[in-house]
Length: 572
Image (cartoon, rainbow, N blue to C red; front, top):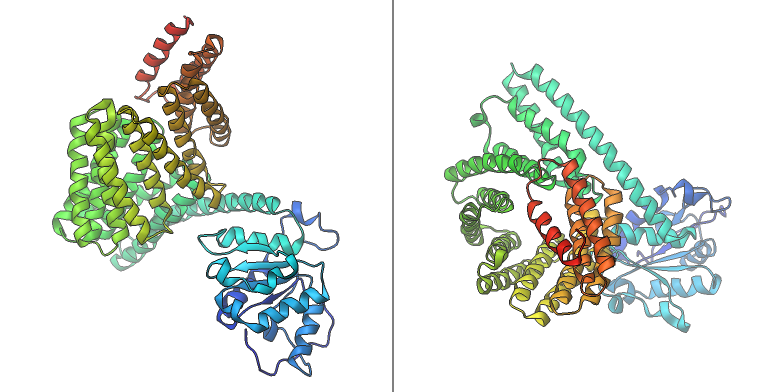
């Protein structure tokens, strides 16, 4: 915070919603926070609860930008603080060392002992960033952690807004999530409109090569956005279904280009990523044949690109993804030979990436993925449990390395959680119940931490049920059916809520059916009547899935397991 300069106080007596106290080292952050607060509008449903205050937070004071004439610095600061409804302290190691920040806190509290003091952590750990005066007299300020590893910029900002406006934080978080969903919806509609415009413009520009190239570049910037930010946002709110038309229009764009061989390599690689995304969505809806066809087409393209640039890390990475997806689609239809061939190919490409890729986090993550797939390969049908355990442990080691390099990357944390889950499954087959339970708790801890940072994320909340299901499986195998029932009861409640949010998500419905079946299996040990009721519910869900997705190819084993358990409990 600038000191020792001629600063002046305005002659008017307007009130300030808050006074920002900060160190000079955090001046840019303070200016940005002031702008955001003054532009922020409270949701209508929240604003009407603030008698006479309206939707705007109000004016925020940030010293030298906001001071008019005054005879001295102390007079200027005292006057501004006397007119502030709240004090925001930007906490950092520099702020803790600043005597001016501490004096402003003491002065504000002496002038307004009952008004809120909001501590906003922007850098460093609390012990090294919070001025000691904040806790003098046993007082504890309201705190918001704006660091990525804390509340994060979004939630931390809403905590500050709630403290200034005097409204419940939960209402702001809920309305913010609704705003985000509406924004994503409009972005999606805009993307669809842009794709339509892109098609018309490309048609009229096809006779002019330079214009066509410009239009292609613009279109592919939009495609890149759809493959990254838009897809991530839609995943976060459970609305990947709206991507279908967008993906199809993107593919039509490439079809209009004529000979694909004339396109730049980056354009061809981007097209393969669209095929991967479309195949993934086909797999989610149970259309495995369509998924495999798209993955094979992408594989041919990335293989050709890699032959031309065998030491380009991006080409290696792209072909590694194709190897994975072809193997994954084959895995879902139980084609073990094809799966092994492509997943071993994935390992080969991942090793190359470790040697050549400057992004070591990506390279280690891909190696972890590749070895993890082989863990799954040897685990299924108890093919080779010792190898499965070994590959899982090696996979975890690479992914822990990736996370140490890039701790902020959520996808690495999710991958690591997956590998702990697979390791638990392998250890359970090996009857190492204690170790299996420990692995599941590690998985649970990682996902719980991610959900705490992003509580509205649909994918993460669904993923949160997996370790719970694994723990129920362990308890059942360990001879504790009542504990298994307790775990599955909680899972069923969560999954039913997710189905209500996203009724077309077949993956969640299958998980719900599996959970009812597991509950029935546990209840069969001590309450046959309830076990029969759970099996009836399982049948009902499977029938719903088959009616909605008649092309689904992975339910035969489900029916067999249900029938066997029904015979055991006397339901048929």
